[in-house]
Image (cartoon, rainbow, N blue to C red; front, top):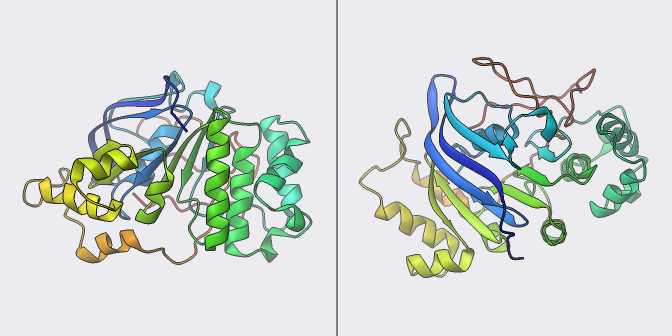
Length: 305
């Protein structure tokens, strides 16, 4: 899929902290529209903080984040951006269909959207089951289905394939590309390097910095390597000794090695509200693109970076 000419996200000189620790220090990046863009890097490198800034739930110290031509977190973006976090935030005591009907009602999405997203995420057979009875991978798909309601223009997906079996991962990436072909912009984070080749464009991240912004083929050509993991390591080798963003220690070898291997199953969260947090206050995660009157028993843990 060739990206469209417009930019879905434009970030300029972004500085953000998690607690007292600087995570993003002067980050600049543009996410093209109508494409599947992979945000690839080791755990703890700042991927989640960057995604939270894009959807407007991360307090930032300075810089600008423009999403679909508007300021990140603006009320007008709530129905235009779908966000799926890493941790489950669906209602265990409701069925799959009831969860999606509730989210659809909050979003003002058509009721027949529920059947559409159930089919897209291969959840129709489980639509009558309580979410509490589902596997981690199935709960992940319920979260993704919720994000697809209302046909958002931008999907921000934090590790959406973690915990999924290989067949379902392939099917999910095929869905991502169908959505991009229809005009949706997707930003998909992962720490698994073998997923990089499935993206139209790659953002390689380490220590709060973007090391590379290129197509998969362009990245391999520029580094003279044959796979993304080798390209990533080659880029690290080009940095000054110990070169990471200010305040970030170099990732241990084990963390870099983990880039090439899948991790243990983890569930995702349902779409999160995009209301901008007050200055100096941390945002409270919610379970849909609009605020809901109640939150599920299991709420997202946003302490990752």
